[in-house]
Length: 171
Image 1 (cartoon, rainbow, N blue to C red):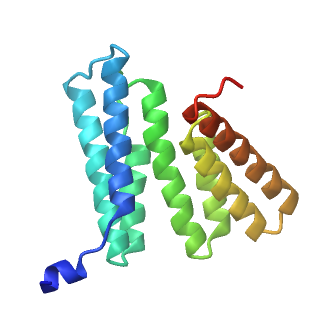
Image 2: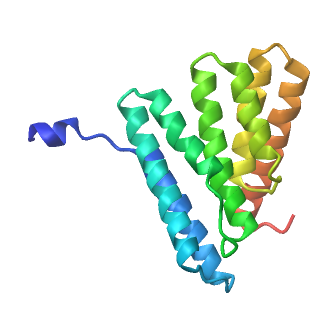
Image 3: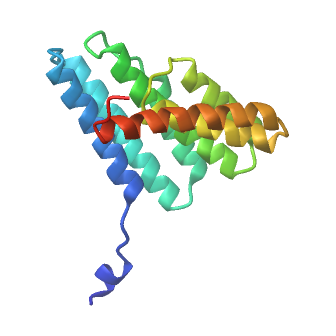
């Protein structure tokens, strides 16, 4: 095995991010909402910032990753990007910011990011479930166990519904 291949590791976060961005683009097209040039630029810019954040985390530059993720949160989406698609992209970024802060012992900041993401709306999707989990973890760290339990329960309910749908159960 060559040294390069020996050092190669799977990058599930990068793959998940790229897949999420592609899913958002496909959803836009399937919904009959073709992206205009400015919408395509927004998707490309957010995707590139996400990939850069992944690389910075991999290199140990967590503050650099935070800057890239904040860029996604702050980048104004053009009208051709559906609000639900913007929500998904920004919720993924706020979740990742909350995870970084929580991992660095900054529970209050993590809680703020999770709440900012959830303020965009709650859908029965993995993005909202992730935010409930990270908010629950932040609340648990802050000694707010009852609120944390409520968040974990909401995430569990969303995940149960997603599993039910994936298995094709009617309910």
